[in-house]
Structures are given as structure tokens and as C-alpha cells.
Length: 196
Ligand code: SAM
Image 1 (cartoon, protein in one colour):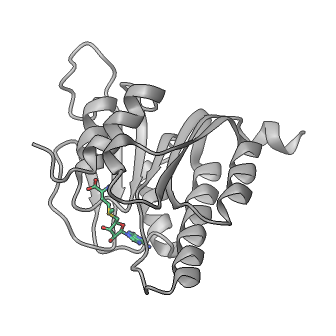
Image 2 (spheres, protein in one colour; image 1 turned 45 degrees about the vertical axis):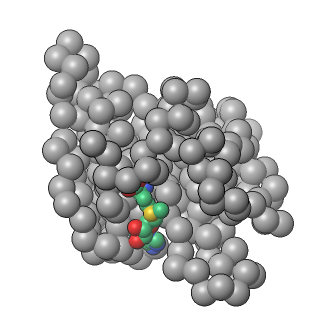
């Protein structure tokens, strides 16, 4: 009952790294058609299915419009890289800190390798900056990258802010040869980093 096979990538990552707990507040960037959102809703209990567990919340954004997912708040037709889109998310969060930021965003490929690589790296940094400002201490982050020269630099940057960072290639993503995910756990908290 997942909207697309991408769901299994997130399920695999969560099974191994336990990135979403009941009660968590989750942001899903590049969420259409919504299968990661479906997984996130189940794992954080945004739909209240696990009656005895705390209820979480999921906020999902995509350039495309997509069908609602019960338990999630959907922002369709919005470009995450735009400041006004982030403001919408911040407004919806209403002061609540985020426990997990997900990004399966991929830019529209031009076919020119260097341009495509640059745009996915820019997207990742955009997600990282947002995560740093909006996350609660100990929060987690999952972002998609394409294996390439810039990835080690990004790994170093993410390591400054999160206790554990892994580069992961889920079994279910083997058909897309260049796709990888950074799984970063244990956000150190901006205060702690600035006092380093
Ligand atoms: N995780 C999704 C799921 O499981 O259903 C699939 C995501 S799909 C691989 C990547 C998505 O990223 C596309 O729907 C695309 O529209 C979106 N995207 C790319 N750039 C974006 C941007 N700047 N802002 C919002 N969404 C973006």
C-alpha cells in the first residue's frame, strides 16, 4: 500500500538506524508522490495508530502537488529552496523543534553531469542549513546525494554537526547506481557547536 518503491529505502534505513520514533516531528523534503511520508507517519505515529505511544507530526513538501497522506501536513507545489516555502514550514511548526529531517529530493537532470551534481549538492546544503536551524538536539537527518567528488566534503561538513554520519546505499536502491544517502544521527545542537 505504499505509493512507490522508494518507501523500502526509508524502511531499510529506519530498520538499521532507527531514525524516527513515536512522537517525533518529521520534515519530508521532495516528498511526492508520498511514500516516505507514509513511512514517516507510521513510524512517528502521526496518525495515532499506536494508541499508547506519543503522537508525532509530519510536514511534507514538494514542487509537485500530491495526494494527502492521513496524519501528514502536505505542502504541494512549493520549491523547498525558496525562502517563502521555508517560512511556510516554520509557520506550520509553530515553534516546535524537528526530530528528523528527510530529503529524497533530486533536481531535474539536465544530463550534463557537472551541472546535475552541483544542483544536488546545493539542494543538500539547503536541507542541511534548514535542519541545523530547526532541529532539536539529538535529531536525525537523511539526505540523498549522488556519489561524486563533492560527497566527501559534504560528509565532513555534516560530521561537524551530527555525532554519527553514515553513507548508505540501501539494497532497494541498487537500480539507481549513483544514488546514496547520508544518514546523520545525534544532532549536536547549534549552541554546543558554536561553543566548540
Ligand atoms: N521520497 C518520495 C517518495 O517516496 O514518494 C520520492 C521523491 S522523488 C525521488 C524526488 C522529488 O523531489 C520529486 O517529486 C521532485 O519534484 C522533488 N523536488 C526536487 N527539487 C525540489 C525542490 N527544490 N523543492 C521541492 N521538491 C523538489
